[in-house]
Length: 196
Image (tube, rainbow, N blue to C red; front, side, top):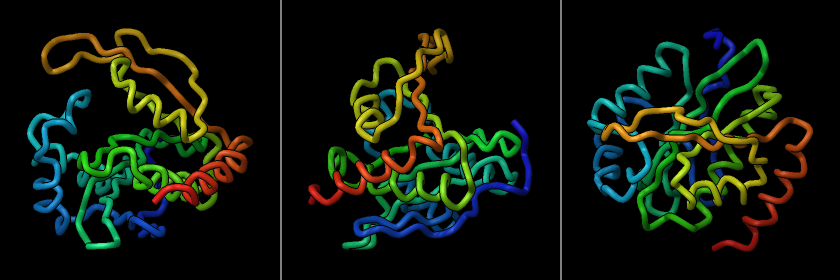
């Protein structure tokens, strides 16, 4: 991975339901509170919430990733976050992940709209050639959500990570490439028109 000043810009991205805000110190306390529901972390490596959030903020400062806090427009609450990371500027590829939302927004228009905003930013503002996702092999809900976005399942990285309890994590890899993006975008926009 090359760490370069050519990261996707850390700018606000606003849709109809959510606004994605580049992560700052001002977000930390509210995000820590939102992240308190243990259901969020069933398949994720979080550890200490403060350290998790600080790592996201420090990744931006180090030029290694672009984390966003997700704010609900209807009432102004912070309800989750997502990151662009593993950014390879030479090959114009990155990963989209570390995504979580408080459970009341699972299965709603929040995730598809946030992903539409992030993917549009990656492909159209930054010029990505490839955006990938890696999902825990047991997290079937997240795998289904990534497939519903229009990403292509590429395969499984076996024994990819060690979970905090010592168990093995295989990671299912999905991607969207630049040539697929216009059709993926159109399907996402159409899908959002049918969601509340």
